[in-house]
Image (cartoon, rainbow, N blue to C red; front, side, top):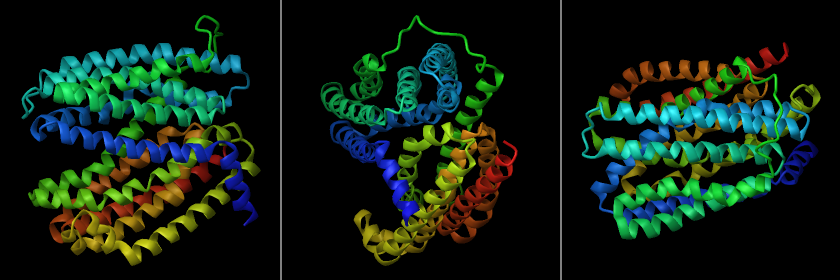
Length: 416
C-alpha cells in the first residue's frame, strides 16, 4: 500500500488532481454545449452540422501530421528549456504548414463527394478550418506539459470549454446552425489568444536540433494514425450493427449502452496526461519505470474491481436512466464494462509506454490487427447474437490490445 500511496501523492504533486477536475469540468461543459445547441437549433439543420463536424473530428488527429505527438515524446527527452522551446517552434511552424495543406485537400475533395444531406460539403469545407487552431492549441498544451506546468494545462481545458458554452449559447441563439458552426471554429481561436502570452517563448530565438529527422516525423505520423484507428475501432461496431441488422433502434441502443463504459476511459487518460512527460523523462531508468507500472496496475486493478462490483449490482438501475427498455440489454452492458477493464489496467498504460520508448508504430499495428479481427468477428457474431455479439467482440479486443501492448512493451524494453 505504500507503493500506491506514493503513486497517488506523486500524481497530486504533478497537479493531477487539477487535471482530473478539469477533465470532469470539460466533459460536463461539452455536454452542456451540445444540449444548448439541441434546444436552440432545429434537429434537421443541427444534424447536418454534426454530421460534417464528426467527419472533421475523425480526421483531427492527423492535423499537423501528428507532430504534436512527436513534440511531447522527443521534447521530454531534451535537457534544456532552450532545446524544448526550439522544438516547440519547429513543430509549430512545420505543423501549421502541414495542417494548411490538409485543410486545402479536404476542401478540394469534399465538393467531389455526393453527400446525402444538403449543404454538407459547405459545412465540411468550413469546419475543416478548425483543424488549424485546434492543432496549435494542442501544441500549446503539450508545451505546458513539457514545462511540468500541468496546472496551466488543466486551465486550458477549463477555459476552452467555458468559451465553447458561451459562444454556442450566443451564436446559436442568433444564427442557429450557422452560428453553432462558427462557435466551433472560434472557440479554439479565442482560447489561443488567451494563452499565447503564458508560453513565454521568443519566436526568434531558436537553435537547430538534430532530432528533427525522418524518424521524428514518422513517429508523429504513426501516433496520429493510431489515434484515428482507435476512434474507428470504437465506432465500427455501431456501423456494422446498422449495416447488418438494418435496425436503427439497435444502433441507438448500442450507442447508449456503450456510452458509460467508453466514458470511463477518461480515468487512465487523466493519469497519462499528468505523468507522460515524467515517465518519458525517466524511461531509461528501469527501476522507476517498473515501480510506475506496479503502482499503476495496482491502482487500476482496484478501480476495475470496484467498477465491476458497482455495475454488477446497479447496472439495471443505471440503464433505466436512459430508458427502461435498455434493461433487457443488461448482459451486453456488463460485457462492455468487463471489457473496459482491459483498457484501464493494460492498454491505457502500455500503449503510452510504447510511445514513450519511440515505438508509436507498434500501437498502429496492434490497432490495425484489432480492427481486422473486429470486422471478421462481427460479421459472424452480430447476425447470430445481435448486439451482444458486438459487445463480446469489443470486450475481447479491449483485453487483446491491452495484453498485446504489454507483451510488446516488455519485449522491446529489454532492447532499449
